[in-house]
Length: 236
Image 1: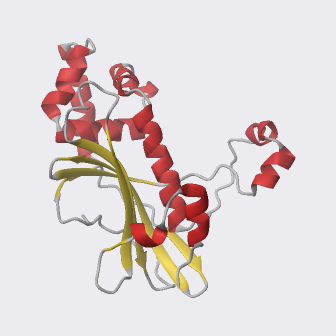
Image 2 (image 1 turned 45 degrees about the vertical axis):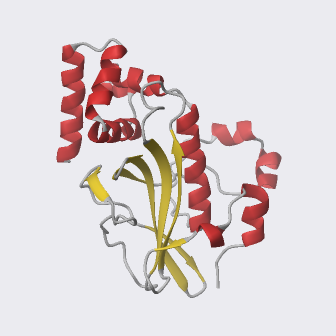
């Protein structure tokens, strides 16, 4: 029995959880949602076989399973170029009735037969209905942020996927030049996810990546500093 309302996702999100689900084993207890998009708004990358995508992997588990770390699996059997870090991930779970699901979210770069995946989590900044937002007012909600409350909020896998797709589509619409410019500036101006995203590009297409940096005016010292940042990331 699915834990989602199919008609709701079709009507509001143009997303069919049943048809877009990809089983990863014969039992049907492990599956994935995935959507990838071509890079069209960058003259360096638009002519390449380069895509960025959202991937959510879902696995049924025992209700008493703890937060054990898990290794990322490549669902297509393709070559996995690298993992972003070796840090312990925060496992995400969703429980409804007798079902407990473990959820892994990834932003994935695809280039030819290679992949680079970046584990990520969602931060819920407001928990409530649309009516709650209208009643309280978005300005009042903003005043209360950031909150020091750290409460685990369980979200359905389908909601994770919708949110992750929206974020990835936002990345595509934004200028990649901006991300490269921030990388060329001081490290404190670059948030960790941007570093990981650009490290993925550097890993998959290093020559094109360096060519773009030089085209944007990067000098030898700046390029060396960026490569050092990436190397330190790989050691963590």
